[in-house]
Structures are given as structure tokens and as C-alpha cells.
Image (cartoon, rainbow, N blue to C red):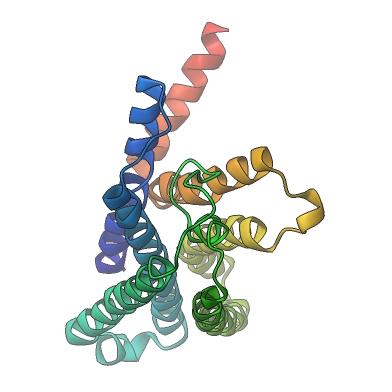
Length: 254
């Protein structure tokens, strides 16, 4: 579990680092410019980290399933070699899909204007700048990415259905509480990741506006990577005690 958490932390750090520093620098300099190379880097890096993170979340749901439903086979099913292979597959799939999306997006002729209505270079916003019908290649690639993401979502749901069934059969209340406490951080991270991304890309066009798109994009691109470490860290008793003391001190000062 901690091996997967390490990879997840690296992905969260990479996702924030690919968009937020440039946006902060532009705000400080009161500009909205970005170089062509910088835009290409953002289009590649952000999907790379996001795709890889979703695959890691799927892998971690399988890890929780094996740990709770088949604990005696854990070392066999998820040994160090298997974990390395799963991690390599997640990083590799993220890299492949990001590379294909970037190559397809920037192979299109961008002939309308060069203003992206977003605080970072986002593929849907760049596609709006194209006046060529060849953007359908990118749409098919997006469909393929969505289908693969849906398969990952189904695997996560199936894993948790099996987990909840196994947990509810545990006779002791303390055992059930311990099992649920093990799964809740991962389930919270998955829910936050999917809810923000789904709302960003599946919201009705009738409520879409530049300001709302900006807020939603910030929500799904910044909030999950920033909150994920906090969610998992709350299992640490020392951190929970420190957070409790901080909140208590704030109320006492008021």
C-alpha cells in the first residue's frame, strides 16, 4: 500500500507542478502569455499524470480487495515483482495516452486565434481553435480514453462491492471498523477525483460559461492533487492530534 501511495504522491506533485506554477507566475507578472513549447508541455504532462493517477487508483482498489478478501494470498498475488509491474503499467499507459493526445492535438492546424480560455493549455480548449475536420482523430482518441477510464471505474466498483460484502461478514464490530478505516481514504480520493473530472467534462452545455469553465477546471486540476495527501495523512495518529490541537487553538483564540 505504501509503495502505491508513494507513486500517487509523485503523480499529485507532478499534476500540480505542470499547471499551477505557470499560472501563479502569470498572475504575479500580470500577463496571460505562455510559449508554444510550454503549452505543448502542459498538454502532455497534465493528462500523463491524470491518466496514470486513475490507473494507480484502480490498482489500489485491487490492492485493498486482496488485502481484505484474500489476505492469506496477499504476498502471492501482490508481491514486490507484481507491484512493480502494475506500477510500470500505470506509468506506461499514462505516458502512451498523453503522447498520443499531444501528437494528435498539435498536428491540427490552429487557424482561428491563439487565445485559450483557460488558466492552462487544455486539450478541449485547443481543439476549439482548429478549423480542420481532422480533429475527429483526437475525438476518437478521447472516446478510447473514456472507454478505458470506464473499464477502470467498473473494476473499482466491483472491487469495493466485494470488499463491502466481505467486511459485513466480519463478526466483530472492531474488525469491521478497522477494515472500513483502511478503505475510506482511498474511496474518498476516488470519489473526489471522479466527481470533479466528471462535472468538468460532462456538465450540460446550457450552463457552460468561460468563468464557470475556469472554476471547474481549477476544481478538478488543483483540488484532488492538493487534498489527496491530506486525506491519506489523516490515518496518521500524530497528524490527527496536531490537526485537532490546531483547530482547538483557533477556536480558543476566537
